[in-house]
Length: 443
Image 1 (cartoon, one colour):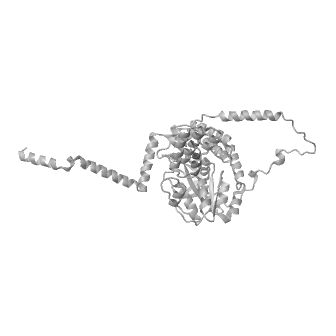
Image 2 (cartoon, rainbow, N blue to C red):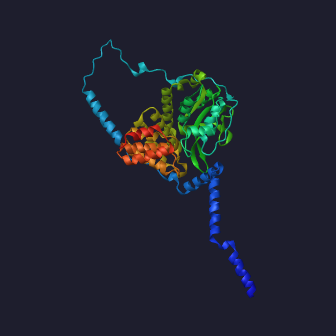
Image 3 (cartoon, rainbow, N blue to C red):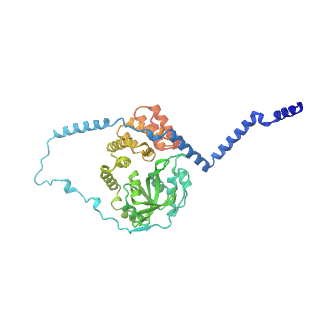
């Protein structure tokens, strides 16, 4: 190669912009800035978060963890000892004499007609509520989207973004519970009422739908890739001839669900549902609920139905049955019995194949925390909350789990730990009054 050509080549090399490292750095930084800006767009952020979740759970499978209660039988044994001692004392007290004139009060004499024998509310063979809208949910916004649809149906104008801001305590809040939706309606709408009941079945569903009342239920849903999770559905039609109900699903559009499938999935959440309706129709709604109009009776009947099913269930459905029994008992204030039911549920959970384990359950229903805590099983409360949080990817936006972890730590005298847990709860639920109250007397 001639000297002239070498000279030209060297000059070109010297002048080439790609030989200057700061240019690469600038381009890289520019791409990073563009990526961060793009991430602020909700559609892109949601897709990235979804991809990250799938990768995280692929390499950190939550279903591999099994909660094993460590305090089974400890508190129960103390209670039994106390009951035995009280029985011994009672046996030493002379039995009162009963005269012939004194009527004996027996279970048979005081028994009231059982609710199960009540006449079902008459319903047509099929019914469709006209005018039920459909609002496709944004990322992780199932609850707000459904309550928005329900309120709009009754002429109370809103949208899922307004409901998101009102119901979700944080941008990453994982779940809005039906009780929170009911409370929102009662506290923030004019002329509308809402009730929550358990133990929903096809008869109650038809009675309400045929009266023009959409029913918002919580049910299980199994995704082929993401596994089991909770999902909300508004049922607005049914048809006995096809044995199906119809729902305007915020994810899947208008869908029909076979009766059998609906009942199976609904029982994953103890048949819980809410009904939103104009306050002046209260009498009609209660009449259609029949024996379930009374809250206490509704709980009793729901518990009886679950207990009747438990001997016949197996596998994952048995887990849900025991868990539902615990949830109902918590609602009844029977914390010791509820804790025992949850022990049974977690025992069944451990026997399930990893792919069948509903590891998200404590995102949606926090009955075990309440039952264990009020049974004095603080270590179990803390251990379950810790496992729930460990199984969740960042951000771990589960304020209820942080709260009950804090309450358990506080009860065990772990004040510093309690402070940490409570502060995390407030991070995901700012200004939460129950947390602030719990922190007030911490040293």
